[in-house]
Image (cartoon, rainbow, N blue to C red; front, side):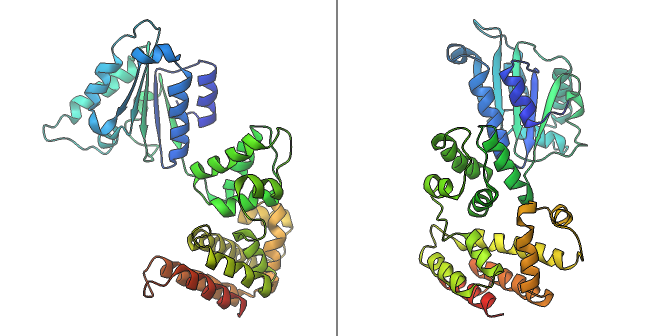
Length: 349
């Protein structure tokens, strides 16, 4: 049975638990979130001492894990076994066998346990790789197990994820504050949640989060940030843009070039799309390029200020800057120089 992360979190709170969970995917944040919930919300602290075991797959075989799973709890009606990075499942899914060719017996043991799990055991297996829907280890879990896919969130959905995360704590957020946090943090969900938690702790429930709260509690300057730099470029405000660029150049530890380049590249890649769309409404543009309708005006203004040829040249300049940051081209240029060169090149197109 397939379930979402939110559904499983709800089941844990309501104590509606399946005997086996397989959590896999390329987004570690959701996997860690579920593991933490299983560790802290299923058994009481007293019960955990004798009935909760956290193992690491690289140190265990499937046989070892199932031996533990078939034991009965002590002074509790349930035991919890969590296996982090159950690599033996990944090997089995890929059809790998060890030197003694135990793959066939492991497969039989896996199917047998999935069909007849120990009801007093909660077995949680995690794998930080994304299995395909056709993976052979998934069908045995259909009847009595739960499978959770932890997939990375695309950048265009990151703002909505942040809005929902804060909303679950009764904290609405303004669109410009939301965009500022996304541009500042990037796609690292663990870091995004950490920064959002600062707002959750400090902002009263029900109060709308704006730029003031983000600046005060997250520590992002509302004047000198990636979002304002992009805005200056869109408006062709060279004085403002160069001022921000020099601030970044003098504070590269707090404002590294890499996330700025990702943000600018993604923005102008969408501007390139807008050039090809023709006459559409703002809502149609927002839907097509995958952005909040609130920000469509930025893209249409960029389209007016930067003809197609200049957009292509900006994207090339950003790519070259990225290669310099990574040391692929250039001779170990400092980030200060790369940031200022890019800013100068864009504003002089």
